[in-house]
Amino acid sequence: MKHLAAILVSFLFLAAGASTASAGVEDEQVITISPQSGVSYQVRYSCAAGTMHTLVRSTSGIRVIVEQQLLFEGVDSLPGGSSIAGLPGNDLTTLSKTSNVADSWAVLETLEGDEPLEAAGPTLTISEGVLDCPDYAAPTPSVFVPITPERVLDTRADTAVNYSGPKPGDEATVVLARTDLPALPAGAVAVSATVTATEASTDGFVQLLPTGTTPGGSSNVNPQFPGHTLANNAVSPLASGGVSVYTHRSTHLVVDINGYFVESPEAAAAGRFQQLDETLRIVDTRTASAVNHTSGIVTGGTSLTVPVADFAGLGDEPLDAVAINVTATETGDAGFLQSAATGSLVPGESSIVNPTGPGDTVAAMTIVPVSDDGEIDIYTHADSHVIVDVLGWYTNSDATASTSGRFVPLEPERVLDTRMTEDPVNCCKTAAPQEDRRHDFFTGRIFPAARATVTVNKLDEAGARDLMINLTAVDATDAGFFQTGAADSFVDGASSTVNATDVGSTVANAAIVGLNETNGFGLPSAAFQVYTQNGGHIVADISGYFTK
Image 1: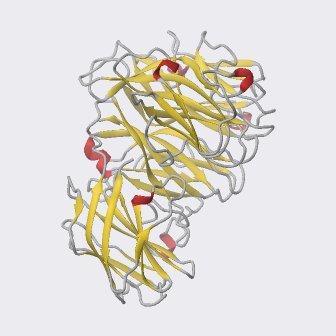
Image 2: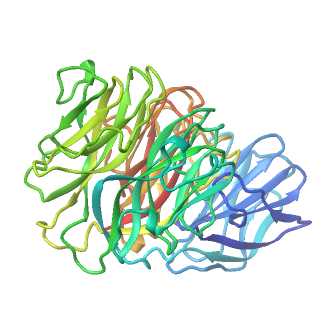
Image 3: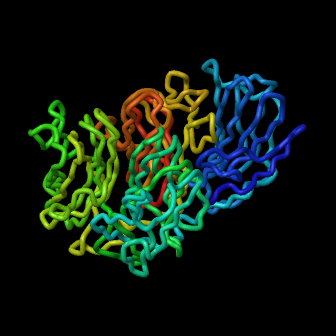
């Protein structure tokens, strides 16, 4: 991930130094400046959003974020003189930001009272900033080729695949060479896979990434306790050496490939993603909320056949595969769920969701080929209620050729992190009266029944219509769901992306999310939002986008 490489700061009696990285954040993204006793300023530039954020901390525990948005295109440096107003002593009752950077705007936050106050105290001045951001439009777009899921890695001794040796340890990297992957054409640029962590030693995270890149800038799976087993879909660009799996803390790993992306510089028929107007629930086996199902819980050891084309109204479309979110809930025991085109599923050859015990609720996004009749099978190892939400679908060779819906893989990049106690990203920036705020002013945690907005203007400029993201709920306020969608379209509670099962839960799921067209005032502002049923912190990482 490329990012803010350096910010040089001049200040009255100033001391500066690089911050200590936390999980998923690299050192050179942030620089901490301590201009006065008890107060520090941490400056970060968000490449995807095109914004610079400054986090102000005090020894009293108060934290405030101010934002400067760089609206002009092609910026690669911050002109000298950009400034952020300081604070007198430890008094954080007011904070404002001013700048002489062209086309930027000012933000004023107040902690008390309805009237904004003028900033008092010294001024922090940025004398030079050098931005090292990706060229989001540079990679060649690609199209998706679905396959019946194939296991390419299992580190467990009794079922080992492409691995020999002890259980991967802390901060270990397991490399999957191209020869370990399903037969790929020369133009393959990315893979889609279900990544499973099992027999975890403790809480941590697992990341799928191109071989040779630095781990830690994003995550895909987040084990929470010793022995935990859980899975998530992940998409990673392919390096010449293949892909790698990084374990932040010791855990066994299982990887199932469900498809790959092949370069398509021109218009193409097959393999283009078509987003639904909004996520559509097509199956719910629970009696109280049943959708297209009347026979109750799915018995362990059996498969549920889902006529996706009919249920989603896609019967006349040139359909090759579907992107779905599968939720197992009210489970009878630990086990797994598995999906494949109807008639091709072999129980136990792969998995998409891993309940850890009775009464569990866990969700995972996956991409599944459909049969000639537009159907898929979902197998449950143990009794489980099943919920299926359709995010969108992939075209087959009968579709009209187009350049829309092709996939551009990107090195994973964090675009949202609401944890002010860590290193926040693109977070909690909106100035608003206290009664209108949607996050805790001091921690960044999103309130129950509220939304967090993630702006990604630079991806919009590159031609993004939908994003491939990994959404992580962190330190949930209570059990409940987290839902994501385009900022101007989705309905709260109509579907779910991530399901927190307890207070303090940390759980992740992949998603494909659309972008809105305007900011509500008629001005361009590409964004998506995340709704929280009962509140919590939110982290979002992007791994690519689909073209307009």
